[in-house]
Length: 182
Image (cartoon, rainbow, N blue to C red; front, side):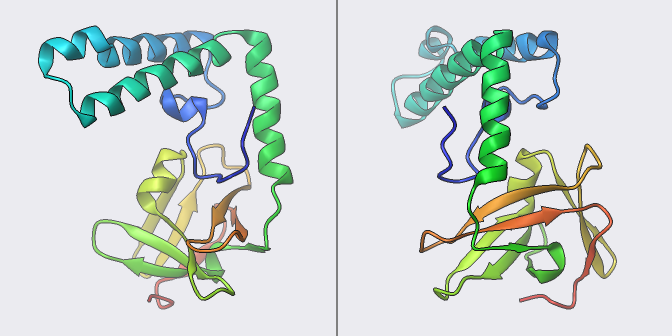
C-alpha cells in the first residue's frame, strides 16, 4: 500500500535504483546486486554490530520487500497503479512551478524553496531531485529541471513545519532566472 505522507519518500524503484519503466531483468539484476552488497552475513565479517549495521540491515529488508512487490507482475501492476494514484490524488495547498520557487545556491547543491503560509518553507534540493530521476540544471543565469521522460510531471513537497503540501510542476520547457535567489 502506498502512503501519501510525503512524495519525497523512497519508492520500491528508488530502493532498487531502477527506473519505473525498468524491465523485469533490470529489476532482478539490481535486486541481486543490492542483496549481495547488503546481506547481513557479509556485513558481519566486515565489522561488529553498530548503528550503521542496523541501517544496512534495514536497507536489506527494504530491498527484499521491493523485490517481493516488483518481481511479481501482478503485485507490480497494483503497486504502479497505487503509486500513480497517490501522485495524482494527493491534496496540495497549491500548484507551483519552477518560476515560483526561490533558489538557494551553496555552490554544490541548488535548493528550491517556496514559503508556506505558516512562515516555514517547502523545499527540495538537487540531490533529492536526482534520487527521483530529475536533473536540476544550472545554465548561466537560469535553471531548469530535466525530466528523463521529457513529459510534464509533478512532485509533492511537504512543509517543514505544518501539514500543508504544494505540488511542484516539472516541465522541461520552463526555465527560471537565478535572480530570484535567497
